[in-house]
Image (cartoon, rainbow, N blue to C red; front, side):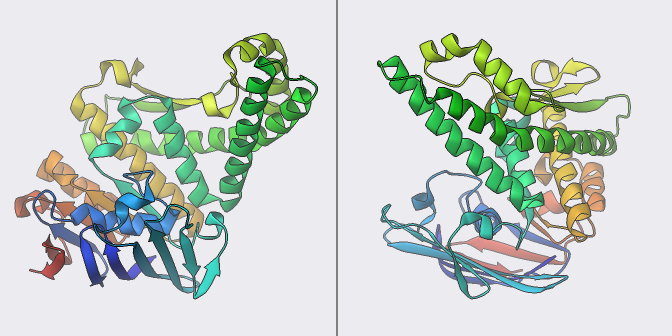
Length: 364
């Protein structure tokens, strides 16, 4: 897949911008706050319908403006895809999605037209923070791999909200009559999530093991990941119904659902030790990068063409050898890479170098 054109209007620091990156590696250099990451965020927005930095769409609108728009043209094996997203400062107005010149009514319709993998400083949270971040990593990857997963996740989350609301009503004196019905619906919705997450985690584990060893240059350090679920992969629906029944009184006291894929995690280990507890900063960073490269591989294999790779201020943390190894791993892809200093991309062999600042991007 190739990004042909990126257009921004009143997006973050950019009033109007058109970017046409070449194939290969495009380096975007600039000081902190110059707007480099804003460009990667705009691409991510068109790929997944959301920012990787904020949950508030209004944050992406240029100060003083009422709306913002991003348009992405990508060339894929089946032709050109035109994806557009318009955001509004008025929170009562829903974001508008445009796909190949037509309005799209559902977020899921956007998924799959353009795919990307992004890695930046905040992605250390995948290996450093709690289970919610790792679940989000898996969910975003699986949504790009299979649009059906995105809809399955929406169904599960909506059902979970309804069941939790019912638990609160019961705690306040409401009837339990409908609880068994919601148990069945939630267990049914959970089954595809558990199975697909477990399958994807196994594929990620195999690839991340190799990526970590290659980038670190330390084959003695064995990086592994394991999907940890409260439910069995073989019979998740039956298992969930059994556990919900067993923990009924606890859930009524706590007024929340205690079991299900919304409680699951990825266990990350390095040479058998918990990575979070024993990993150094360098090991954490290498593990996070290995996970992202593994996601890149899965998308590449699934779609028969590499996704866009967005690297935000990553190379400054790597020595020249590791930089070359990283770029070698993704040399078939189109890469947008940001850094604060020109020396940071030594070894990246860029096709194009751009400088961001003052709401503009110029070639240098």
